[in-house]
Image (cartoon, rainbow, N blue to C red):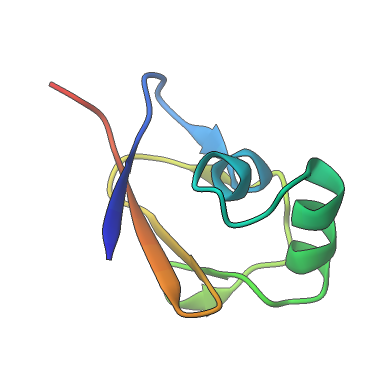
Length: 71
């Protein structure tokens, strides 16, 4: 599991997938989420606009990230 550091109070799931370099485009992120391939906090999530906040986690193809905010 890796930390994905953000500098805002939240990040959308599709943006997080791109920031973590798990997908190459927003279109790919949208497809992966809509197909039910992405987990958020251990559960399948089909909302690409899902807001992730500090402490939330997301995973795709065995790669898991936790959202963090630098102090």
